[in-house]
Amino acid sequence: MRVLFVGNSHTYMNDMPYLFKNVWEKSTGESCEVGMLAYSGRQLEWHRQEYFSLRFALLYGNYDYCVFQQAAHPFPDEKSTLETGKELAELARACGVKPVFFMTWAEKRFPENQEKMIRVYNQMAQESNALLARVGEVWQKVLKEEKDIDLFFKDGEHASIYGDLLIALVMVRTLCPDKVLCLPDRLIDFAVRFEEKKPEASIKDERYVKYDRQAGERLVRQVESVYGS
Image (tube, rainbow, N blue to C red; front, side, top):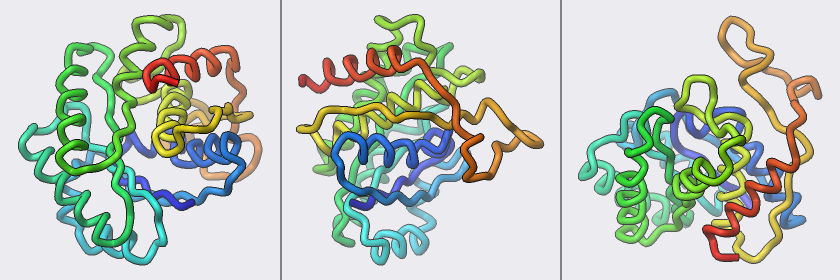
């Protein structure tokens, strides 16, 4: 399977697409390749305007799915989001790729913004006949019921390693509803080993960090409780 991720820093944080690949392969026993078009602060409208780059990736990348993530903080205009989402979903399908929308989460200091995100993403997925990765819904539930698991990076906006683990679990469950979710052995944490405010660029083992697997198992249960498994 091949998946293209399109978004901004909420997509690339802690190498989330690669984490998705690891969770997918451990959960399904099937190989997975990922690609990414994600740039800091960009809205889906920016990706729509960069038509030729996205078109090429979709048309020639042999992708099965394309995951679209709208800007989150602040969340863009509702009308523009719905219109752009529909156009991007149509572009993906025209290229033989199934569209998926990645529902984001509200800032730590503005939890009340989550309900709008949930409503708009549900409408966008329905009107576009696309799959919906319900990350924001599960995120909201974890914040209420698993208060000792910190999903946020230190800025209160981006995801921590546990936040990105949650995203990867939701993505796998969205694309594969009938397999048991399995946890990865290690995670990549942008909060450590920064050089000049940039994360390390290495494929060595030192880029990985260990994590609390019991916390990971609790996240799995929360995902399953929302998805009804």
